[in-house]
Length: 190
Image (spheres, rainbow, N blue to C red):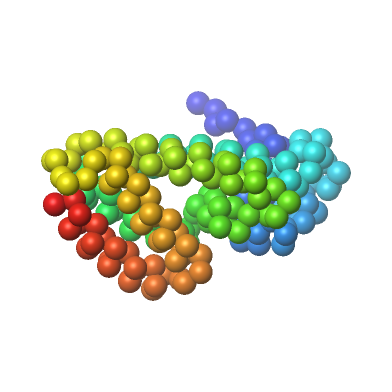
């Protein structure tokens, strides 16, 4: 069986993702991406009109990948509480190892000014998608004082807070906040 060959466009996306995830939009030059791919800078423009188009293309692609990852993760076997807790903990672990997660969090919390509104619209769709996935998980919980919609909205608040902590506070503060927020959340679902 033959492995699918990576196209030049896919190589550009992969290189750009790594650069944007580690250096941000403003800190990344198209010439760096071209060098990483092994092509001349003008060659990039045969695939993407510019850095903004490439960045927005990656936002859409990574949102799709992250929603698929979330859906798959939260459909794994185990109680809803264990899956939801594991997902939060895995977010902390993935932040260091996943360029996709680091990229999408940087895009969400530190978007390029020139495309901030476009990013905000995409990110709202991303968080709405996660909320819907989580709401479906809560439908399997025994009845509580809160609806599955309220619980999902509260869980999204936890995700939002923890993601900001990863970006600005670091892993130790992330863990401290996770432990406290998860304890409170467990009280709410009992």
